[in-house]
Length: 70
Picture 1 (cartoon, rainbow, N blue to C red):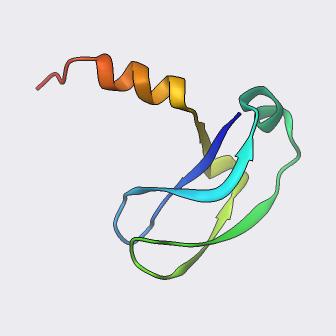
Picture 2 (spheres, rainbow, N blue to C red; picture 1 turned 30 degrees about the vertical axis):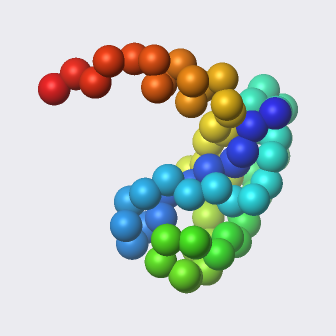
């Protein structure tokens, strides 16, 4: 299980939607729209499931372990 994430259209930052899903189940789910209050810009963002992604702890741990390439 991971958190469904979207990108804030004002700031470009990744924000959690407050919803959780299994990555494979989310990929196979029917198209849907959602609305999320952004903690960054304090605006309600409407979003389409095709724009969202699943972020899970193991992914964050793998990303943190990678060196930053410039």
